Length: 226
Ligand SMILES: C[S@@+](CC[C@H](N)C(=O)[O-])C[C@H]1O[C@@H](n2cnc3c(N)ncnc32)[C@H](O)[C@@H]1O
Image (tube, rainbow, N blue to C red):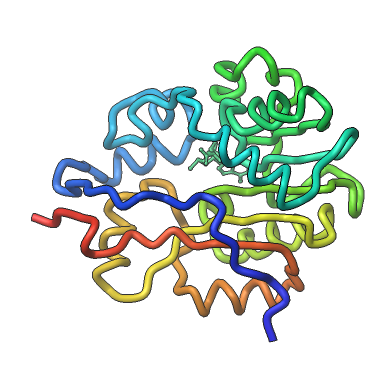
């Protein structure tokens, strides 16, 4: 039986994208995987095409506070926090009561992070988390661990379990058929681990992950494949 539980945190809306416009050449993928300026604030073929704060994390911060019963002094880690949008909103929505931490491999993202949380962000790779066992009341990793190869991805989920004791949420990309895999490979410029839902669950079980998770599946009917 699965210990991990599915939870729809992001509730992404149905939106149509034209994957023909995405030039995910080897060159762009290599550039994106450096998680530097090009990935965050370069062109759409290199990554986000501009990673800006637009308030979309506010409702997610509110949901996390409620679901995980976060209160004064609760410690929350956002893995792959980029410019710190989620930890900024967690801090703000809790009226500075929650203690926020962020880690990211990107020095560029930290250099452009929101002033309110810049000092809370550490440059660290999620394959080895430099925190004590059970240190956090919540660990969040949204669209991060699939950027590592299979073995390191597994290692990082084990690390998440270790520092959170299952008080965690992980969002990963997944596919169910060859067409969805094709879309995923075309659209996600940095992923190294592509798995089906069942394979993710197998990985969660193998490392003893007992927190929450969800998949982002780029469904056929959301994409204009030309
Ligand atoms: C797709 S972005 C997601 C950013 C943010 N969590 C969000 O959902 O908007 C992936 C983030 O993970 C970071 N990242 C990639 N590999 C990482 C690793 N091995 N350890 C820590 N952070 C990593 C990238 O620099 C980037 O900020």
